[in-house]
Length: 88
Image 1 (tube, helix red, strand yellow):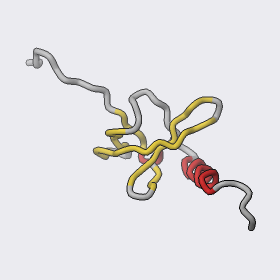
Image 2 (cartoon, one colour; image 1 turned 60 degrees about the vertical axis):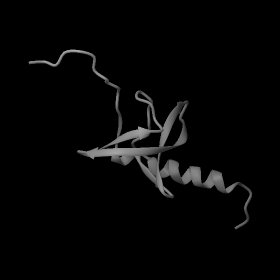
Image 3 (tube, helix red, strand yellow; image 1 turned 180 degrees about the horizontal axis):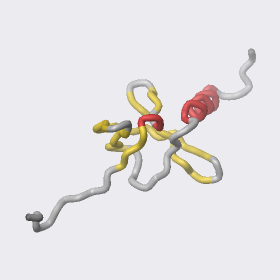
C-alpha cells in the first residue's frame, strides 16, 4: 500500500566524485557561470554511493558543475589567488 498524507520531500543535489576537489579542510566544486567561466564553490558533502556524492550545502539542485578537467580549473584558481606579476 502506498503511503498517504503530506510528505516532506526536497530535491537532493549530487555530483560525481570526480567533480570534487579537496580544499584545506573540506571540498569545493566549480559551478558553471556561462561563457566558459566557472566559480569555485565550497560545499559540504553527505552520503556517497556508486561514485556519486550528495551535496548537503553549497550547490542548489539544477546548478551545473564541472565534472571533467576539474584539476585544471583548481590549478588556474590557485594561480589567480596568488596574484600576478610575481617574479620567477
